[in-house]
Amino acid sequence: MATMESLIELVNRIQRACTVLGDYGGDGADLPTLWESLPSVAVVGGQSSGKSSVLESIVGRDFLPRGSGIVTRRPLVLQLHKTVKTESGNTEYGEFLHLPKRRFNDFSAVRREIQEETDRMTGKSKMISPIPIHLSIYSPNVVNLTLIDLPGLTKVAVDGQPESIVSDIENMVRSYVEKPNSIILAISPANQDIATSDAIKLAREVDPSGVRTFGVLTKLDLMDRGTNALDVLEGRAYRLQHPWVGIVNRSQADINKNVNMLAARNKERDYFLSSTEYGHLANKMGSEYLAKLLSKHLKLVINEKIPNIISLINKTIYELEREMNQIGAPVAVDAGAQLYTLLELCRAFDRIFKEHLDGGRPGGDRIYGVFDNQLPAALRKLPFDRHLSLQNVRKIVSEADGYQPHLIAPEQGYRRLIEGSLNYFRGPAEASVDAVHFVLKELVRKSIAETEELKRFPTFQAELAAACYAALERFRIDSRKTTIRLVDMESSYLTVDFFRRLPVEMEKGDISSGFSSSVDHFAEGHFRKIASNVYSYIKMIMENLRISIPKAVVHCQVREAKRSLLDYFYAHLGKKEGKQLARLLDEDPALMERRKQCSKRLELYKNARDEIDSISWSTR
Ligand code: GDP
Ligand code: MG
Image (tube, rainbow, N blue to C red):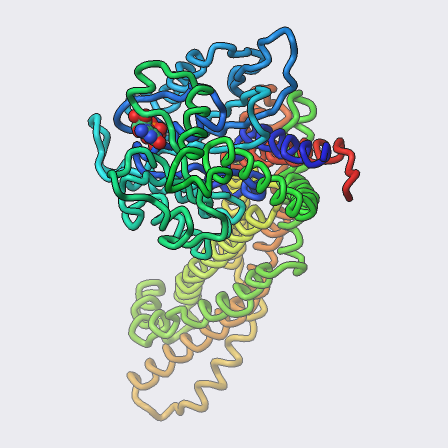
């Protein structure tokens, strides 16, 4: 039996740890909850149904705040610890979790503290809060039991409370009782039709089969003369798996007269023993019986659940540790270690970026798409047919070489036509530079997103991206200069060989076009020939540039990105002071919070495991 007693104590201690470490179930955070796997008794019922009275008579002391309106505005986790009676007295005291090491021997001070602690959390606004107050009561007159007092279900807001309080309370209460491990102590007053009981309504909803609901009927003494509650107490009005318990608490008049709790218990016992209606049920009625019934049931449930709880604890410890590993250790505090971390992050990013360029990851091939498709297509589309139209050739040649140009090879005309054509190549050259620039930028963006280690540092991510973009911009400027220079070089010196071959070809052309035609006809053929000569020269250069522009672009942009993308940034990091380094390592606040939460929860589960390990499992 000692082991059975220690079981409730064990759960008590784990529940305490839960509250200390912020696990009170239903908190919405995406964290594993231990609280929800532990059995507990939740007290539910309408306003003034007698909840506080039942709790107090189970404890045997007055300690709960009273008053009209919604008095209980935070859950009260009440843990009862049975102590051994000693000669010295003072064995009975309360202790709040939020005031550790302070013993409350005066129970009216307990009541005041509950009130004040409620206000501390909810303010004077009379709002409700789901964060429980945790009170332990040590007494020889209690049984080991954990009860949760919840705000009373209500139908209207009072005291200037917002209308939403009605549904807020219902939702909070429901969040406690819908958990499969919650034992529901459903309080209904006997002087009200059971069909209208708020407690039964909610219990029926969350526990339709009634396996975890204990029905309690209060105010039996207040029923109309000539009526009785046997239909309810004997389970005919509303059937539950556990027997109904009838209660007679102190009336308001008793409270006003300060009737002692123990006297009230005796009075209650007498009430049942002497009752003509309930006499046959006397040993299964009353608050003392209720306390024992609940304690026994709780032990049973705990004993049944312990193996599951242990395996849940072990599984959760494993999962939380894995998540903590994923999140990573908190950032180092000294500047040297911070710089090291930053460089490691850069290297991790750089490795992935290079993999993209080298084909280990996708995206780098788009650079070759620029050279294989975009550039040749742009070159093909250049408007040489317009530039070398008969009309334009005639105009340019006439302007350059004066009249009678057809009598000699028009050198100036050729030069101008060629130079004019070469100008068109600047466009595709610059477009290639820009296209590759955007591919590289996109690869930087992708690589940052793919660097797991960077995920927790949004500030550094932005800084790193900015540094990479600035470097790429420098490469782009250099690349543009270089490719334009390639184009310009073509116009500074025309390939001599080409011109040496020209007269021969012209003669051939002249023969074929026929000497017998008119002068005009001759001139037209002459210009056509010039256009075709210029075009074949341009085509030769186009072919050169199609090959040399990619070389320049790769040299200036791709190769540099691989070689020196972060050079400036490294130098810049090296000059930073501790504070600036720390700022760069600003973690995502959500992640820091998550790490904190996980580590707290992990501590809870480890505590719980230690608690369980410390029990001698003689019954197993
Ligand atoms: P709560 O709002 O559910 O916590 O209800 P309380 O425990 O504060 O009780 C409301 C009122 O009903 C108080 O004045 C109690 O004295 C009174 N009361 C509660 N139970 C009984 C009972 O069994 N008999 C009598 N006569 N009065 C009761
Ligand atoms: Mg109350």
